[in-house]
Length: 215
Image (cartoon, rainbow, N blue to C red; front, top):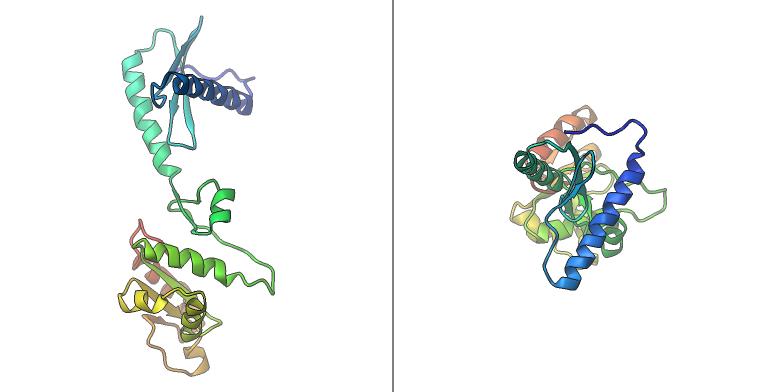
């Protein structure tokens, strides 16, 4: 492989590579020859290879002129697949938010939504969870403010049937509200002592497969 010169601006280089790829795709579109699989640029002092890594990234690899191109292409193919896997996104099921995020949230990432007081932010989480449950994923709701019955009612007010997913075992509650109020709880996880919150959340996360959603 050929090392980048120390004075190369990574952002400028990336922008130029993106322009090259865009031009190639436009040319291919004009010729009806399909998607661009890779681009090899041979220069006086080396080779630059551009390889799409899904829809959101381009992998670039500079190499010496004498490099074994076949072996290099195999390695780049593997790396591009790894990058594509990392950058896979999951929809939030909130169309405008998905547009802003470029399709959704990066898969297997931990994301925290923050809202100022008085904003009805719960609806965002409810809509995301409902969409994922409808797609067959599994998830849970941790509550330390509202009782589970209240949350089920709020789902129903949006015409989302959380009860069905609870009955099917596809969704469950980590209830930190009812026990603290001295009320009975039939939630899968009930927290009687707030020192147990972390342990209960970790156990709940382990109840959700790695490729599934949890809230």
